[in-house]
Length: 630
Image (cartoon, rainbow, N blue to C red; front, side, top):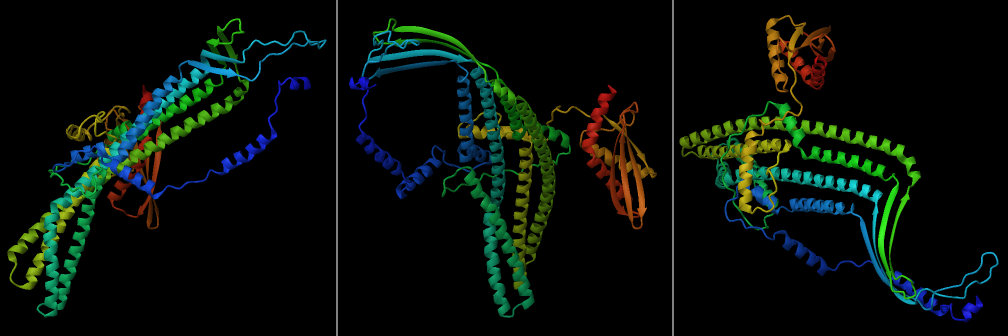
């Protein structure tokens, strides 16, 4: 070793250099410290973001219709832009994932140099004698290059299922984009109709508010001068203040909707616009065929279609884990070059095949299968819970729409009555102060009634839009990013008219059709009561696609029993359904308490409640009985 060192083959690093480098490295590590943003940097970022919010937007050049408002929102809304970019990103990642399945072609090049010549001697294993003089087969300076083609079957399998998962992630992003579009359209409709109601009444409101404030002043003066009794003056003032307060609340509530609409359309602050007048279209009646709408919602809702993609992702994840337990087979073939002149061959081809297998991964197979079963069950439970939530949401939306129609009808009648009262009061106003004050109060009440009617109509439109949104329909049939604002507005108008006209009538045969039933009453002696009960049950079941057939339907026996206990009566309805062959009898029981000696309508209500509570079971029984009879 000393001889080798003496020949200069081994050189020692000076100790002083090492001592100098240590504090330098320590100083470099300690020099890193947080650097806060300066005020100029933050201001620059704010200016850039603000300037980018309103780029490439067509200015508002006229009254804005509801279709144009939706079109502007879809083209310029920043939240939708974000979802659109996220979907595009997932699509790009999907394409990128496909390249992972390709074989690898690795190329490399480099240059090697060293201080002295490489080489060595050979020493005998047994006698430890040097058999060769020191020699080398490598130059001190030489270049290298290689190109190797390799393919791993295991990596290919894993990449294949990863690419399928990424494709499903793109579908999930698309469904979330659909949901954003549906919510945006619903928000635009909500804000538009409320803002339009405020716009229609703004001038009339300003006039009546000025008159009401003037009437307040005159009423106070008349009270001070004893021209009218104090109690009458105070009553007038109280009524006027109530009307003014309600008018202000209604006006503020509806006018705020215009600011919300401007934010949805991404209108620059300070830009005013006018809404285009829209005819009050006849609102469709509340739907009764609830089951068909449930089918549509379960078919169309983005949340459930997203769950379908998640189900496939879970299945592919299991397959990917299973594939990773297989042996890995690698195929290699490449070309190598070395500029070393001492080599006999400066370029050569290499090839090989290798099999490797981590057998210990097989121990995780039972756990993997168990986890996969658990994940599948969790996904199924989540889909069922989501489906139930959607069906409940649909039923609530239908009920809200029905109640909104009733509210609008009442508000319309009330507004007409208020207008007639105001007209009669104007015709009968005299020169007396109290008569004039009463006329102003009546006019204010008429304007308030008009606000209430406009608000009720807006609520009915909103409820219908919410029902439309609950069904999962898209406001546009396909991609629209390349359409200009005018083209998109026309497409939205045409598509909304087509879909909304047929929304509540469309259906699917996803769940088939239920067989018919026949009703038999036990415990109900009054024939008139039986007829009424049968009619109520028929209407209820018909709403859920279950029809009656006295001759060929499955017999449904409805048994009424009552147990008296002092002033309380316990009433039970038992439902029994059996097949035509008398097999597979199904039954359910519904209990309730009613006052003793109740009217017949109480028992009828209990029957409706019993049928409603057992509808899910009744559907399952009918499907099962039909299969058993075939």
